[in-house]
Image (cartoon, rainbow, N blue to C red; front, side, top):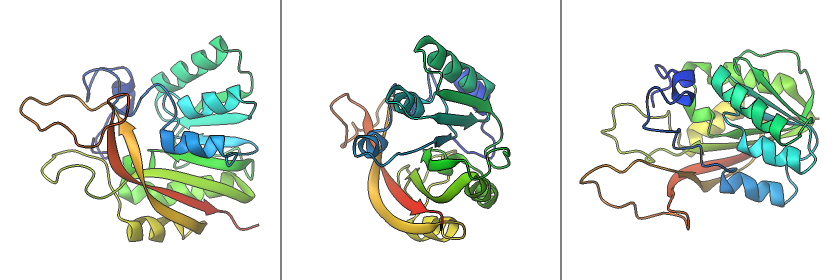
Length: 222
């Protein structure tokens, strides 16, 4: 899943990279972020950064929030837009754009959520991404980032996300936002079975692998 070479639209078309839908497409919001939603922490207008099939922002829209999802994949945006139409969610808008350089939403969003996007970006585009979402954030806006931790994937995997350690994550985000908290978390995924591989030790009640991650909370200065 090397973000330097991954053709994300082909992934969402199920034409390359994975056998079937992407493993992170679990048909519902990531549990770590669903918990924030239940706790009332995803407030105001919400940006779903790198939304993919947009399970989180669709759930937020169904609960009454105004949401915008941005993703580079036309296929993912079409699927999210169709889901919003089918569910009658006129408060959900999906836009195909480069999340590292999008414009037109200056100081719009009270909450920005990154559900497994950060580790998918080329490392040299992280700062541009953070600059773009900072520009779109309203004064005092909250940012939540769910990202793979170093060691989530075996070291001998040829292509994998750009996992982070806590110091690396803090250093990158603190250039643009005030860090409130970074804590260990889990990303739930439908990982393909590999013949001869050991059974994963950490799975949820639906059989999804729970992979090491961080959940970062931050805010934009008022």
